[in-house]
Length: 427
Ligand code: GDP
Ligand code: IMO
Ligand code: MG
Image (tube, rainbow, N blue to C red; front, top):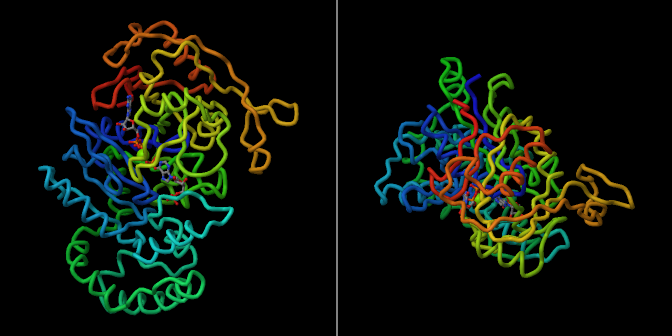
């Protein structure tokens, strides 16, 4: 069982990129299995910050092969730009491969996402406007363009012509916006095709071969459990499965391949975009935490909504993913608070519940039941041993373990690759 999975347990931005980069030095391969460039994964090494959107966060450890899996939706223009930026910073990108089954996120997907979001519907999701939903919708409507289509130019052009006619009808007739010009689109794809075709592989075959040879493969989740298309706060979710199950369908590996399934838990909660958020703090405390934690979107720059740690949310992630370990991040940001509330249940219609109701109307009415922890004043960002943490901080961390029943492998105390307290050796 040489497969490792990293997933978000809340609403995204838990610090998955940091943890994947850290684990990346131990593995032979890092694989993205879902989502697209809606992700913003930050890696900080010696003060240098890199934000990755489509490239796996293992890319800075050049020894690992970085694979963009079949379940990812790939905006090829964004991908090549991201590679160019990395190269200009001196990083190597010859270790990047793309699944030939991955769907191509087309310029019209971006436009349709923007138009949908600007339409002022009650169900405006607050998406990243990167075309993720429209691209997955086409995939499941069986009118998507796939990477392998680029290998055969005639097939690509023929498919594009047919699909574009339909997309243009929606763009012009539903939204009254400007259509895309077929010839212009074709011209845009000609030069990038030359670059993309040599990077394509049968990723399912390559990853399974690696697992058969007992190589270590790390699967990098984007987004998180509460944004899951099935189990999140639908419709305020993303359009993929950012869970361990997403690895199975998004790469094509068997469940037995997954040995360690590591859930990243931010020590408080953040959310970007619309949707219910029971522990949200729309007050000075929330604002102060946003500033201290630099909680602004790594992809869109939007201010993230702030709230206390919500353990029923984490509990759902534990169950749905079958988490084997947790990694706690950003606990350093909580230093200086007198008291720290943690949500341990919800109150709904006079009853205490510890699950997430399906109906948004119900979830919107749920009230948090808090357990109050005493805070600590010390700056803990340079602590490297658990026993050296202030006792109240230790109690806070141990409570998360107790509540979830999942061992904590790592506590991150600053954004740097080496800013961690290691509690369990998982390699
Ligand atoms: P991801 O989407 O889950 O990869 O997370 P993001 O990169 O969007 O957001 C996490 C932010 O927190 C980034 O700016 C990280 O550099 C930063 N970060 C990660 N871990 C820690 C930590 O333990 N302490 C602090 N202060 N910052 C952290
Ligand atoms: P990482 O991987 C936080 C949110 C958007 C919106 C909803 C749907 O960095 O944790 P989409 O563009 O996917 O259709 O938007 O999901 N969202 C994220 N929030 N972190 C992310 O990724 C996100 N990716 C999407 O804000 O609410
Ligand atoms: Mg992020």
